[in-house]
Image (cartoon, rainbow, N blue to C red; front, side, top):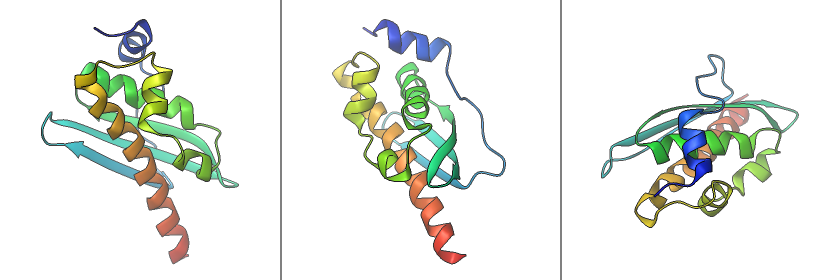
Length: 124
């Protein structure tokens, strides 16, 4: 059902936790399946210097959260906004069709954190 990469990111999630002084925070959820993801970002010179996550959900939700942090870290904000659900799923070697909504959440949470950062910057 799950690829080896999905199982690896589920069993050994990367960048799990929160950033207490995060520059941006994005939380998204899916009431249908009960998954809830929060992505925290630290930005320096328009780059995602650190990306962490906290996720309550199934194995696919945890794996996609882990993968989004790896895909985003080091990227510019603009590059981070271009990461799609397909990018997340492809980098995990695919997800079962019934679990594709989980990869939507990971990309949405990252995008939400970047937008949160941008709103805070406008207020400065």
